[in-house]
Image (cartoon, rainbow, N blue to C red; front, side):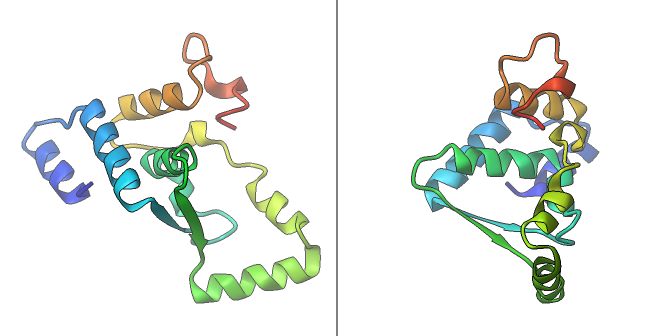
Amino acid sequence: VNQFRVEEKRWRGEREDFRTLERTFEARIKSTMHLVCLLDPWKSPEYISRIWCIFEVWKAMNTEGCELDIVLPFAQEAEFKDQLGEDGLLAIWKAFEAVRIQKAQATEPSDCANILRLIDPGVKNGDYKASERCA
């Protein structure tokens, strides 16, 4: 999805329909069967603060045969290895225990609601705070 084109439409007062974006993301995942996620900084990645990035990961994880790679910038990789050496896997758990995708952002607030609804369709009244699938 070309984010610049989506933004240009927004400036013109036009809006990209959620279903169109959903189908576009899904088609891209299925055509490449590969997703690369850049986690920077590794302890609090910008990537997981954006709902459409979370949606990409969710789509990739739910597409049979899709490969998902997590990458870190060189400096972050060194810090990650150092932290693993000190704390083992506890370092990873500490970094990600506070992650709540319910707090992820989107330019269009309705996109957040639509994506959370896809991830956990069993939630009633849009109360995703208690959702284990969205935690």
